[in-house]
Length: 114
Image (cartoon, rainbow, N blue to C red; front, side, top):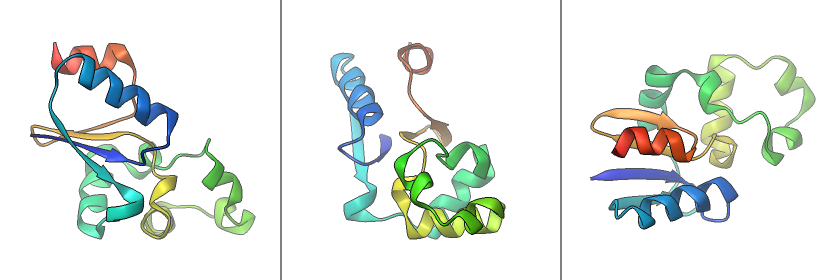
């Protein structure tokens, strides 16, 4: 089963979910806002793709972050921020066959699902 992580009102999430549905790809959706994000899962993602890939520095939650936190962000503080505010995680995060994929584009999903 494919697991898709994010928040439902995110435009990129909507595009990814629409693409999966149009292609007939079954997936399980995990809503960060309702279901949270476990430290263990986030650590697996960080190990797989790096905290820099996961931390969304273009979104509203990043802009709202305290300037002192942004100025001194590192691996540990990024993990702490992502656990406290899961909506700052770049979306979507897709788990497929033990691999972690972050972000969405039709081309990247086409390559994943053939």
